[in-house]
Image 1 (tube, rainbow, N blue to C red):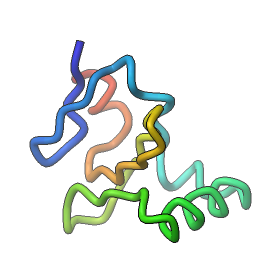
Image 2: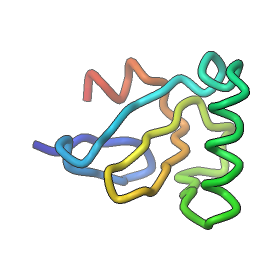
Image 3: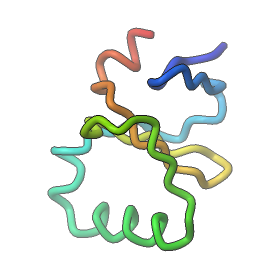
Length: 76
């Protein structure tokens, strides 16, 4: 099964480790550190020029920043 995560990007559900709300998840210092390290390692993929609302962590290490909120992605 596949899931649309924004801007015509579709990923396999089995490859998703987690879908997180950007506002609430980045309250944690650990999450901010994780995203910072992922960006330095060039593993962060921005799906849109819009302000991201969520991020999706994949099993292969990529992190997608999505303009869709988590509920929209999960319903997809």
